[in-house]
Image (cartoon, rainbow, N blue to C red; front, side, top):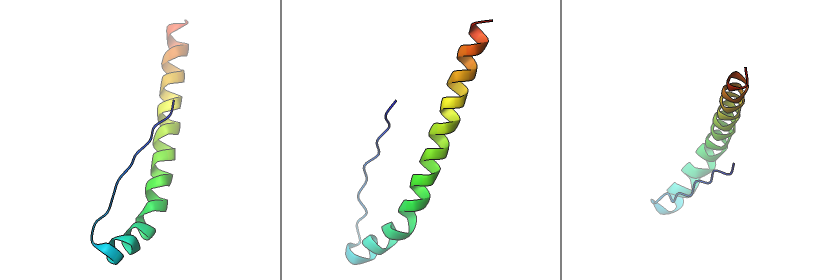
Length: 50
């Protein structure tokens, strides 16, 4: 599964600065969410096979 998010922060140079601080956290949070979703899907699949 591929999940892609695109966004734009306004505020000119201040927005670029804000993005530099928040982007790594967003990226890490999305990876965690996708890993959790993967585990959930796999656990549902294995429970159906029983």
